[in-house]
Length: 187
Image (cartoon, rainbow, N blue to C red; front, side):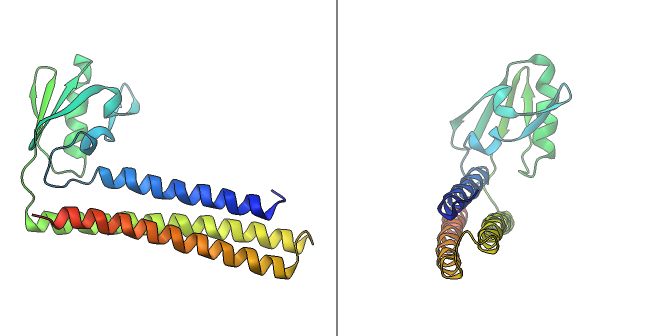
């Protein structure tokens, strides 16, 4: 890329991608209620391929404390059960033919704290991803300046713009984390 504005637009898009990834990640963090998104992202070893659970079954939450998973392929039921047991959700599936029931126990205070730590960890990963995008864009801007395509004053202006972009996205990541933490600690 030879245009510094394109570099900033690309950085913005990639930082937005990090925020979206964080949102998807946090949806899967369990609050006290059953929600299909809790298990949709679990990967199942399906004939040697890591396949998302939502591609192998119909997932629903008929009650506030129960998730049902209707597995389409009878041969995949054991693999789905194993994937749920080895996930970090701490849920015990009960199998009934091709249907798997996942009762959602109320969260203990200790489990809530563990989940809050998990949320903080995910937010930190998003911050790191955003800073990596900034570093990459910064390197590109410096390269343009070294090649004489932009002046030092332009470089400084673009760096300030990049920093504002970074700060805004980090604030967004932290807001997502705070929102999820609030949900978790609400009894």
